[in-house]
Length: 216
Image 1 (cartoon, rainbow, N blue to C red):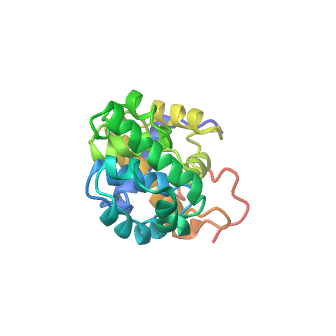
Image 2 (image 1 turned 120 degrees about the vertical axis):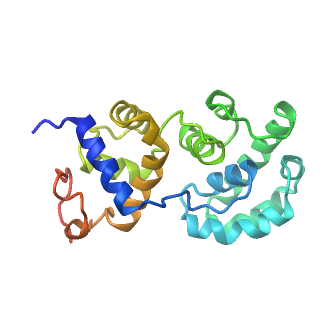
Image 3 (image 1 turned 90 degrees about the horizontal axis):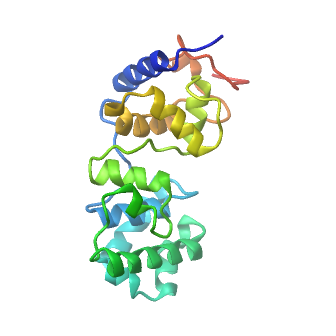
């Protein structure tokens, strides 16, 4: 059955606003630099774990110059539990060095500038722009977004760039930031990878459940 994606997206946004009216980024931060570091750490790691690590990290390093001049081993020891700690430490230091060198130590507020930074791809850039600066230049696509959007029939793609393109075409721009966060919340809380809780989901009435083999 062919789905009208714009209508489906509108139904989805309405349901998400009812389910998660207060949906916000779950990473703890107090400024754009802290958010950028936290999002880099969140790769292949839960927000909960990142939030356990960042208080000590943010207390030790307060500016981009602090990170850029830090002992790699010290950063690694502080972020070890987030996984891939050597790669993440390198990304953080090189990202910070670029901020000092090219942006006066500040995190830029444009997609083009953010994408030049080490460790920052479109997903990270979208989080920074939407959460730190209130700018909507795209939709955050992570593993939860890809899964839920596919099940709802909002995309047939698996490549994040193409998924984002499909979603940007059917979701109203004013909803992009909320949609990106709320879909992740939904993926974590109800629409899990192995056994989604379809019987508890208010979207079950209009969800085609693409790819769902078993549900609760």
